Picture (cartoon, rainbow, N blue to C red):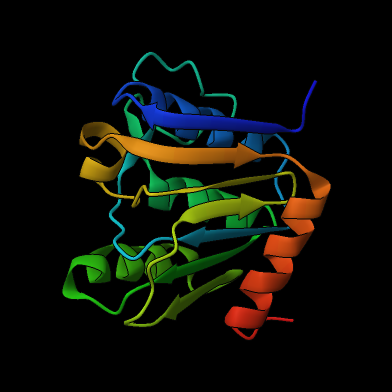
Length: 169
């Protein structure tokens, strides 16, 4: 099986399914470190637990749609270091504040710059990059061009790039 998958022009139904699969896999086998990079970010609904299908991932979750901040908080509690890079914009403030409040800043670092344009999520075994912001419109409305890559070389390269860019060794 090839290590690289390229998806372009994903439909509004495919992106949420892809994100749900990525985060379910993360919760089952957490990365040591996750980078979530998005100029615009909201506390989007990521996992559909309305039928309690994912109760085994986190028993305290209610029968509802699980928010990005809940997932990232759970990952920090399991030892994952979460880095969120975004713009210092009013739109992003509520998500950043909620995340820092829920995690108490433990295993969670927020990086910001006005010039940010890159978008993606990077874990120990994957890199999803493309045109999608982590917002409602980014995952459910807009047509997005995304690349999902599992190549160890690409992942290692991106880990170096992100760590160097944001001063994390």
